[in-house]
Image 1: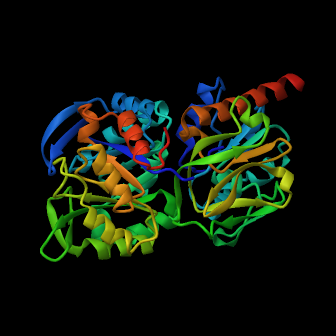
Image 2 (image 1 turned 135 degrees about the vertical axis):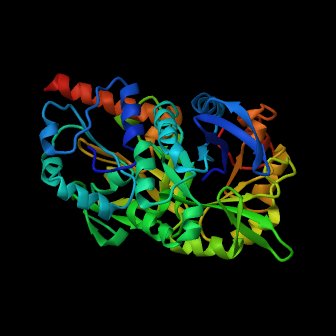
Length: 251
Length: 198
C-alpha cells in the first residue's frame, strides 16, 4: 500500500537553515546537510529544501547544498525557490534533486509548468502555492509571500495540475509557523479539484494536526519545519503517532 | 551512462557507497573496461531515447552482454515500446511500457511495498520491502518469468524485471534508504562476479 509521507522542510538561505513565523522573523536552525541526514535517519520519507534567498545571487550556494545533500542523504529531495526557467530546473535536477518546486515564476508565466513537465516529466514538477485566506476563499501570493497576485488558490491549483504539475505543495500563509494546525478547509478545497498528490504545509504543531491533514483533508503528505528543527516532535515520534492513529506510514 | 537523467548524482553516490568505482560516460567508447553498466532515468522516455540516439549509445547498449541495471525510466527503456508518447525503446526485454491507468492519483509518488522474487538483486532482503517510487508508467513484460518484483497501486504493476544479465527496477534504489542501497550493493556484487568469471 502506498504510504502517507512525512516531509521535513528546510528553508535555506546563504547555506544555512532558517525558520520564520508567517514568512518573517527568521532564526538560524543549523546546517542543511546535518539536519537532512538526521531527519532521513529518523524515517523522513523525503526532504524538502526551499531556497528562500530572494535574489538570484544565492543560486550557486543552493545548488552546492543540493549536491552535498544528494550525496549524503538517501531519501528523495525536493528543491524549490528561485527556479525561474527550464534551465534552472535542469541545473537543480542535475545537482541531485529528485523533484523541483516552482512558484513565483510559474505565476508570472504559467507555461513554465507545461514546459518543465514536457522537458522532465510531470513526476518531478511540484507546484508550490502560498495561499492566504480572504473573505471569500484563498489568494495566491508570490515572491515568498510578499506579493499578492489576485489569483484564487483553488483555481490556480487546478490550472497547475492540468498544465503538468505532478504534485502540489500547498502552504497556508496564515498558519505558517503558528503551530495552529494545517488549514484543512484549504486542503479539502484543493483536493476536490485535482487528481495529483497534495502536500499539506503550514501550521503543523502536533501529531493530531498531521492526523487531521490525512484523515480529514485527504492530504497525501505532510510537510513541517518548526516542530522538527526544535526537536519538539521528532520524525520517528510523529510516525509512530500517525501509525497509532491508523495512518499508513513507513516506519 | 549519463544521458541527462536527473538522478545521476544520487545513483553514482549509491553505487560508490557499495564499493563500486564509478565512471560517468556519455559515449559508447567509455564502456571499455567496465564490469557493469547502469542506465539511470528521470524524465520522459521520449526525451531519454532521443538523447541515447544523439549520443550514439543505442547499439552499444544493445550489444553489451555484461550486467546492466536500469533504474525507473532506465528500466522502461529496456522494453520494446512505451505508451508514453508512443516511444520506440531499446527492445532488450520483450514487452511494453504501460500507463498506470487504475491508479487513484498520478503520478504514483511515495513509498510502496514491493513483493520480491528470489533474485540475486534482492539478496539479503525479505520477501517484501518498501521502496520509493515516482512514476506514471510501468513495464508489462511479455514473459511472466521476467517479472521479479510486483507492487500495487490501484492495480498490480511490475516493479522489477530481469532478462538474463539485464535487470531493472521501477523504484529508485538510490532514494530508498537501506533497502535501496542493498539493491545497488547486490548489483555491484554481480559486476564483481562477472569480472571474476571473465
